[in-house]
Length: 189
Image 1 (tube, one colour):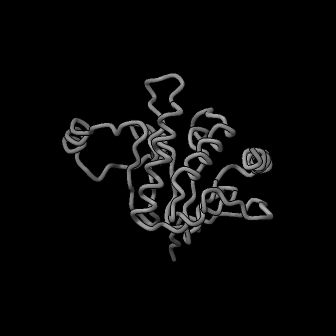
Image 2: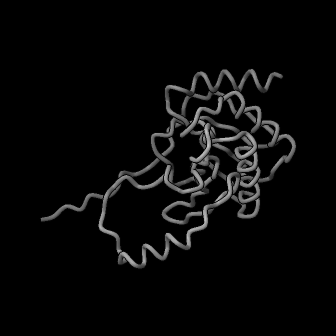
């Protein structure tokens, strides 16, 4: 008997927020992103203009022949920093293009701000009630968490979106306490 290995069930594990935080009408929750919950409407993924940061690390034989791969590569137009691409699969992913690996640092505040705006546009258009998003610019870069939280707060207060209704800020479990403190400080300003 052969056993087929399926990928583990992915889920968001709540990270210890005792109380709901609301910014601009959106419920903000913190989560340790050990995996993504199937109950989420979509997940934001931090990505770069060449789409290599989120690339699958498994080496496998391509389904296309070499000439087809060459043609696709020649026709590839890199997305603009600040844009957001949709990737459908088991779960809708919003690829937030916040890095350009030809720059140092690879991220820019204005790219992150534009991507957050575009994510909120797509959440509204698609009526996404629940959305998980990392602290953009910090997954593959060093954009300060405090600056991201301020940017997010300002954007949510300015836009007051109907969707998402709940935004899960996803991060490594070790960061949750520090980000919760930053969030508290930011809300009190």
